[in-house]
Amino acid sequence: MTIQSLRLSLTIAVFAGMALVGMRAFADKGGLDVFIGRWDLRVQILQPERKVLNYSETYEWALDRKFVRGHTGRKPDGTEDIVFGTYDARVDGYPFWIFSSSGSYTYLPPGSFDARRRAMDWKSPAEWDIAYRSRCLFPDARTRRCTLIMKNWKGKVLLEQEWTAVRRDD
Picture 1: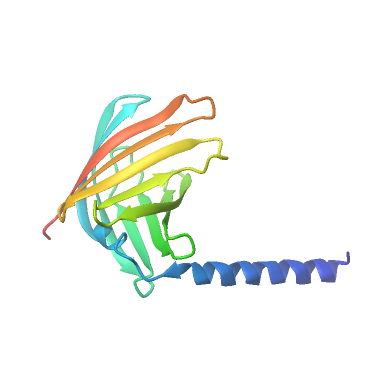
Picture 2 (picture 1 turned 60 degrees about the vertical axis):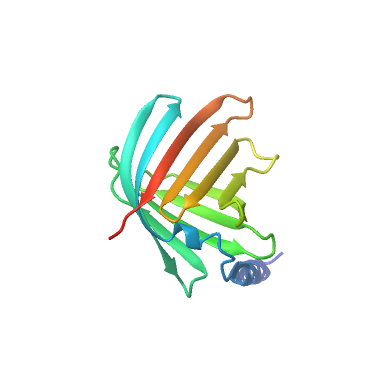
């Protein structure tokens, strides 16, 4: 394969990938709207080391209401996060990307939203080395209660936390 054909192949692959990604974001079916607003969080880390964190976060619509963009305030450890979420109609789910100022990032494969129960659930694919399960319940318009558990491939808990978010009136 010549350098020119390799460049052409890579260019086609990049543009094809961009086209596929561009077709994935569709109008929200209700699972994103529940995140919109300013929230005060109380996070209880249960494992590996117990501690409580308090900080705020804001979610707003972005890019013609095809995405939500979230941003935390400065957390007690000095970091902050940026979050993006969308609705992927091909799989009828809600993927999220979380980026931290620490340099780490997390991709949550599409979660499912049950509008009747007002619940969003995420679960890692079986083939991943890290297993996680997370759920957010929205019992009313002002409250979000979430849980997360993450384990390594041996089943050892790496992170377990629960948090409550209360929507601000401002």
